[in-house]
Amino acid sequence: MKKLVVCNQKMLLARDEAKLLRKALDDVDLSKINFIVCPSYINLDVFKGYNLGAQDAFYEDKGTFTGEISAYQLSLLNVKFVIIGHSERRMFDNEKVINAKVKAVLRNSMTPILCVGETKTDKSLRRTSEVIKRQLETALSGVVLDDTQEIIIAYEPVWAIGSGKCMQKEDIEDTILYIKKILSMLEISNYKIIYGGSITPKTIENIRNELVDGYLIGNSSVVLDDLNMIIKCIK
Ligand code: PGA
Image (cartoon, rainbow, N blue to C red):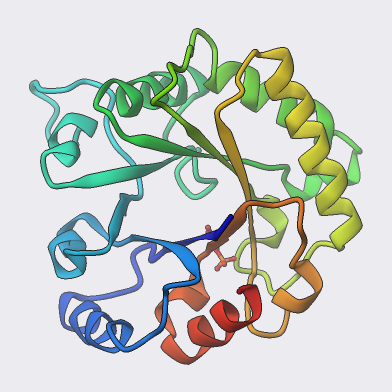
C-alpha cells in the first residue's frame, strides 16, 4: 500500500508563495505515495487538482458563527480530509468540541485526520498512554464508521512538533501498537495511523517504519527541496 504523505502547511504561506510552491510541486513525482495537501483556507483553490485537506473545520453546518468555516462548506470546495485536534488548535477546542468536529467531518463525507499526542510534561510524568487513550476515547465517542468511511489517526508527540527533536523508532512503534489496541476497544476498524513531528530530510531515515501508514509533515512540507528528499526516502 502506498504511504500517505499529509502536508500541513499551517499558516506558513502567503498566497503568492503558495502559488510558487504549487507550480514547483507539479514537477515532483508523487506517483508512489498518496499525497494530501492541507493549505490555509484561503489557499485551498491554489492546490486544486491535488487531494485536498483543511486544517480545521467548525462542527455546525451553517449559522451565525462569525469567523468560522464549517465542514459542510469545505466539503463543497472538494476538500476530502480535515485535520482535527492539532496541538496548535487544541488550546481553542475542548474535547467535546473535537468530538463534534470529527462527527461533522464524517457527516459531510470527508475523512478526519485526528491528531493525538503527549506533551513534554505528559512524557516526563510517564502519562503518554493515559493521555492518548483519553484523547481517542473522547474524540471518537459515539463515532460509528460505515464501510465507506475511514479515519486517519495522526500520532504527533507535541514535544516533537517543530522542535527538531525526533522520536525513537521503537517508541513510535510501541505507541502505534497501543493506539491500535485502543481503536479495537472502541470497535473502530477502518483506520490508518500516520506519524508526525519534526519530519525533515535528516530525521526521516530514523523515523521511517513499516507500522505506520504514512507521515504528517509540517514545516518541511513548504520547502520543496526538503519535501522532495523526504518523499524519495519514504517511497
Ligand atoms: P512539524 O509539524 O513537521 O513542523 O514538526 C508537524 C505538524 O504540526 O503537523
